[in-house]
Image (cartoon, rainbow, N blue to C red; front, side):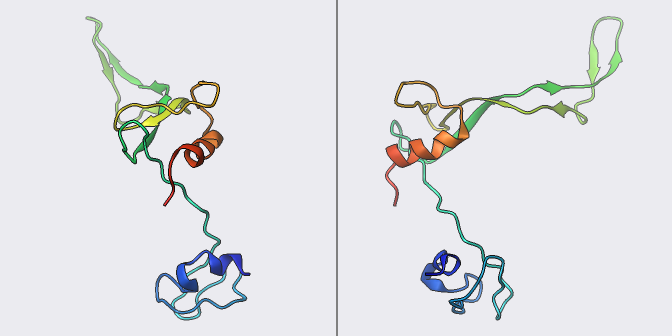
Length: 128
């Protein structure tokens, strides 16, 4: 069983439909078109249990620094909006973009760890 070949539907190159050799290795190329083969990672589909939306979002708190170009005597500040500095965000929750439903673990605690998202999706969302 070749994991790389089995990652592709019907064991053929997605670009030219040529059969993938049984001895293909990770990073190997299709002899016909040059497509580079990798073991494809299974993906999951989120379906909101409240509204049925497929759109999951990461709601984050982000610090943004706007450099100030001019300080007016009346207190009006002139910001340089083209050269903002953004720092890493802190996840507040993962939730449905359609209705705001937030993912919660078995202890009813809001999920903020990205590694817990696939576990939740596998458990709560029917996969096709």
